[in-house]
Image (cartoon, rainbow, N blue to C red; front, side, top):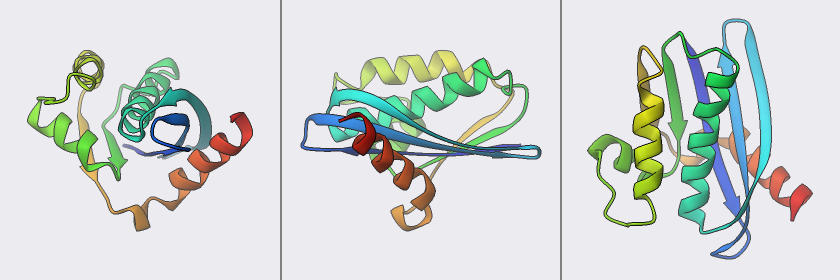
Length: 131
């Protein structure tokens, strides 16, 4: 099983945004920071979430159970309810639903910010590096 932790950081709202991804598996431990462009804080959370799943597929690690953690209640609730009230979030939900089919089992779990420090630090590093 792979555990993935994601978080985003934004300067301003909207503003330049960075994402952090921590991937932990049996023989895998990666820390990635990425620039997400100009967006709102919620959009940044969705972008890094989708980026993490795409990364796992690119690395051909999607043949196992994946548990992805996010401290964004908006992202987790949108995924769980399979519905996005905000029209800006609908494309992210549709992208998730397409990616979800490429995993045998994909679980999404909310966790408090205090338990997501690794991804948070990486998101802030991306923001400092690229903005």
